[in-house]
Length: 127
Image 1 (cartoon, rainbow, N blue to C red):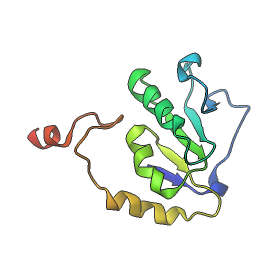
Image 2 (image 1 turned 120 degrees about the vertical axis):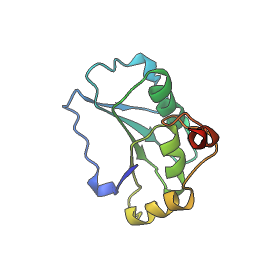
Image 3 (image 1 turned 30 degrees about the vertical axis):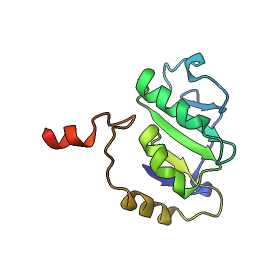
């Protein structure tokens, strides 16, 4: 997962290949033709509807482009974001992007599959 600081994130509203969805919008209501990036918004860290949107985009709709988490994104959410289909996370203003890698080092593997890698750990080792 790529981590961006608040200042590194840019919004280009004139580019049709970039779509921003509010957390109450159904991803199935948007045409994904020609879309390269979808920004999903976390209005506050306790609102997890964007996780469901990301999972739906990856697993059910087969979206292969970039899914970016924006809004109230905290470091302790990053591992869950990666497992549900996010590629990029834009951290809240003032958070250190360098500290984010420690979250991934802390949790290097999972028994269950994820939205991106559906095989459980035992199936990976058996292969």
